[in-house]
Image 1 (cartoon, rainbow, N blue to C red):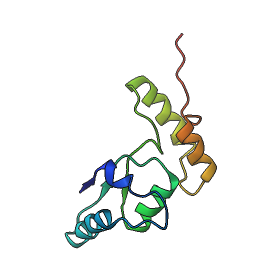
Image 2: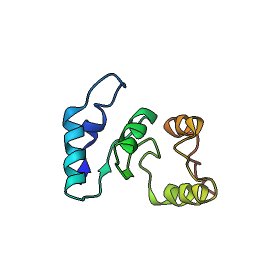
Image 3: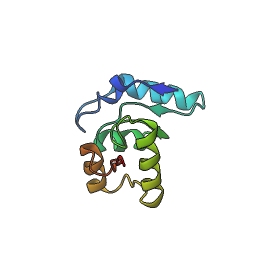
Length: 106
């Protein structure tokens, strides 16, 4: 089941409740479906979703959209330097685009 980015955006603080998102996640678990959350942009969203059993994450937290050439460079770099969600510094750099190497034109 794919969770739209609008629901991921409802995760803004620990005090706020996300009843619709929680219901979607609960339903997916009851139906034994794998869950993909799209549009994840913050460490708080990642933490909330993984704590609630969401197994697949998409979004700017990991990387911004890129063309094939830049993806090849990104993939090569991250095969040697895997992204670790527990690393707050890595998540911040990823959001700012610092970890995504730029390809050079020769």
